[in-house]
Length: 95
Image (tube, rainbow, N blue to C red; front, side):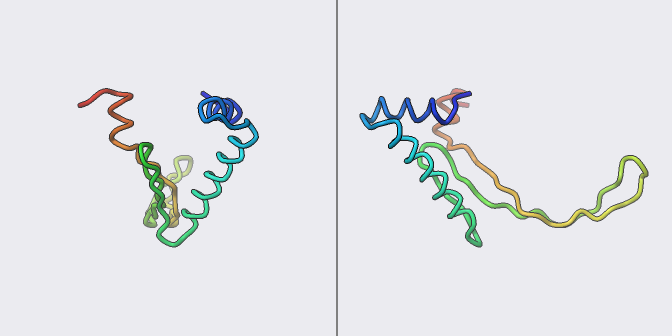
């Protein structure tokens, strides 16, 4: 797995900018994604990569495995990333 520093170094070499500028661009992208996802119906599409979305799960009933007692699991919001078809096909091959 590549680290943030390795990604910044790669971008710096490819784009002809300093590593500090590349790292700053990565941090700004992460900030932008976070800001968009904090909106009510937050979603952000990164062309060629995929879509970040918020997803709300409904409340449901569960069971405590130790005691068998039924419990209520509250609704909550989760983040989801859906990979773009073009990226999926380039990695896994067309289906």
